[in-house]
Image 1 (tube, rainbow, N blue to C red):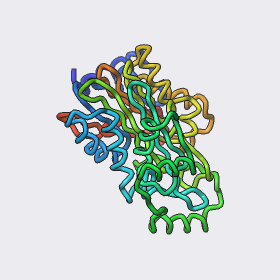
Image 2: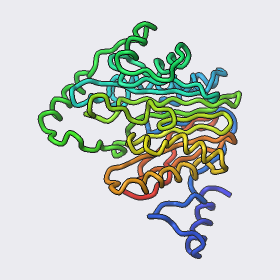
Image 3: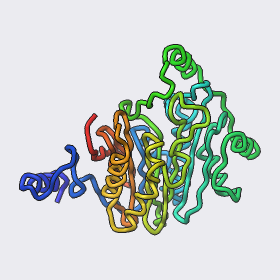
Image 4: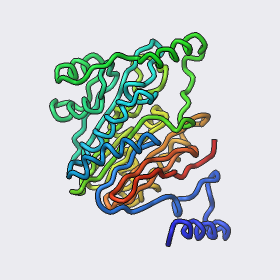
Length: 329
């Protein structure tokens, strides 16, 4: 049955009263769910298209899922037009651009960096933390010194365009704790998850964080279990959106555990989104989205509000997929 007929069939069940929609959202029975054979890579938002293509170069040469997602993340980190990731990211309220990233493979190895300033590729540094230290996370000055000691590229931030915007914000903005606008620009943290030709999973998540955040703030992106979780026995999940809300439900780890217990990716993503909704009385501007792959090759996602999508690349496909959601803006 094709997707259109599947949705029509589900609609008949709704009309018959057999299934009740929640806040206008499509229900798990007919959420986007597709089974993919062979290697694949998916990532959050429109900038995931180019990131996936960079990662695919690794996969098509027989490289690992982890290396593919790191390569994709580094591509996005280099994009000076991106205001939520890497070199072009917006600063904290004091004018400092600090970057966060993590990576994880299917065997449970992981690395993470947070509050990293002046280094071009936090995703690559996170991978080095995983491979070259006994630690899972390095932050701040220690993370920077580690990066310098290992020869990682340095950068000067904020770039001029971002600094100009920051100075304007500083003059005009009086609400320093205002929740960031997420999703309307189709543009936020990038999380990438992949499965390689050997059936192994890997993932990477990278961001410059909440624009004009308090100095020292970390979101979900560098936190294993929140912004990213990978397990070869089950699959992988990653998140985007308001990091504080994602951290408080251990979002990506719970998605994977729900898949372990039998849920398909979209169903698991939806359950975690609904937990976030239940735990937050004020959902004004609170967008969170999850994407996931299970060990059977099923792919899916779900978000609080409409507008969230993810990029998907396989041997035969290179496209954007709109996820289902609980409510409209």
